Length: 190
Image (cartoon, rainbow, N blue to C red; front, side, top):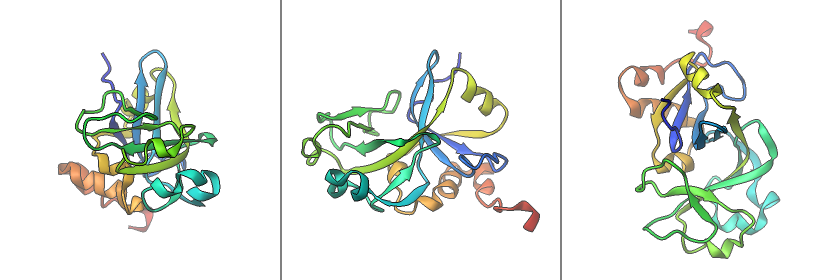
């Protein structure tokens, strides 16, 4: 029986050469055995300001206030993640399936009026596109050694320095993975 991965992180191993996922940290948003897996890359900020594409959400976005490249699938669509403090579930927000109740991270309905969430969220980030895998595809990649599966912390999706998230998550895992965090960008130059 495969483990449900929703709410966990997929951290690219240094050997994963696909430019879409090289040194990426992906938060698994949905994981259904019959339908596949959907996630968002957390550490790929773009230079596009949120105000250029979703002006009404600008005041709620956690810095940097840019759209993040969530993955190669549907790059012209947007989704957002937000943290909700407390136990209420505001309209326009849905907790991630499989995530620990304490994490309170979930998806935001960007078609909802932002004022519905304005007082109910602590952090918000917008992603263009997403990462997707068909049934069994992600598990095959994990088995091949392309991904480390690690616990997520709510703050991972809203890191102030997203370009350092890959190293930070690996260091936090400790042991051998903390050493992997020091792996050079280009081993030939080592």
